[in-house]
Image (tube, rainbow over all chains, first blue to last red; front, side, top):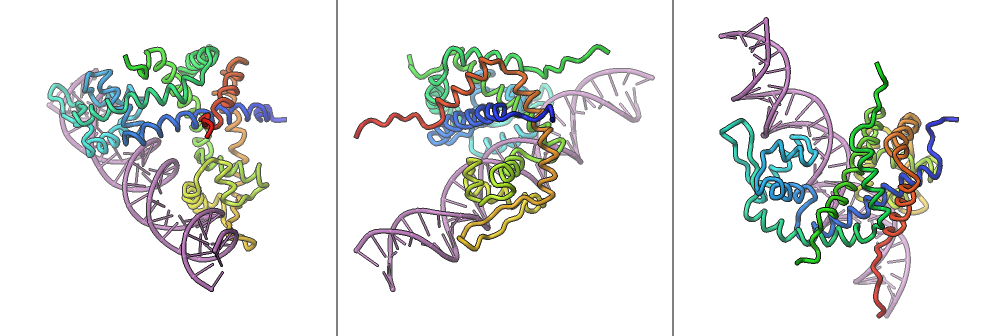
Amino acid sequence: MNKNELSEEEMRIWHLWKGSFHRIFGRVIKDMSEHTGLSEGDYGVLDRLVLLGDGSLRQQELADSMNWDKSRLSHHLTRMEKRGLVTRKPLDTDRGVLVLITPAGRSVLDDARPIVSKAIREHFLDQLTEQDIESIAKLAERTRTKSSAAPLP
Amino acid sequence: MNKNELSEEEMRIWHLWKGSFHRIFGRVIKDMSEHTGLSEGDYGVLDRLVLLGDGSLRQQELADSMNWDKSRLSHHLTRMEKRGLVTRKPLDTDRGVLVLITPAGRSVLDDARPIVSKAIREHFLDQLTEQDIESIAKLAERTRTKSSAAPLP
DNA sequence: CGCGTTTGGTTGACATATCAACCACTTCGG
DNA sequence: CCGAAGTGGTTGATATGTCAACCAAACGCG
């Protein structure tokens, strides 16, 4: 018998977990995008520009804070720039680029915030027990970094 | 004060949950795709063809079982067909289409199974406590269907 | 100096996801 | 029989994600 095979019960947990995430997350994103036209990525960018940089961030910092690679962010910003949500400005101090939220971007973000909050509360937070919250926090902690306990050399 | 605004703590839980999912899920998919060249969708299709239909399923049933719309599946099958993983055959009984796994597809699936199982165990199951499992199951149950308690007419 | 490496970004190609339009055929209510 | 609505799929356009290649400036050091 293969020690790697998953039992019915193990597969069930995996699928329940995956399914719950997609359902809940999908509902939140759908509520937001239907009301504001923003995608998840759009919201993440605008939100961080304001919260982390008071309206602007250097591109690499933004990428790091989103866990996106530079290519993905570059493509995404190109699209957002085309829609007038952000602008890019080369820095003279160094060879970086500063990403700035536009007034239009700020306005859309302000519209989106309460909708996102409401959606997260409704579809996610309101469904959680105290025990769920504890589980979520601890699982996040346990999986934060690759827990590859390297054996001694 | 806006009753909808999320507290620091509430946002933290949301981000922890989202982050854990992406980390864990990403690790599983990465392990699989690096070793077998299959995407998540590819695996889902092949897996269901074998488990649910002993090698073939009608396209609509496959779509339903994956929670995909017909368009998404149609595009995906076109790509998989091009790679020789599946074939499509029109039914004569009715206007549907039968999707069949090819020998090549079956072989790739057989290679993938132990890798996927190992990855799910390592990155997910081994990180769970009994309490986590209970939480996951109950949250899935609570969010299964849109809990929109329709008022009496 | 002078060459290799790193840093910060862009670009093109291709895979995947979503949406709406289309199509052929069936079903059903007059 | 007619026409409206449904079924099972395809298609094209566009958005998003990933990967590798490229580029120019900055740095590290012999």
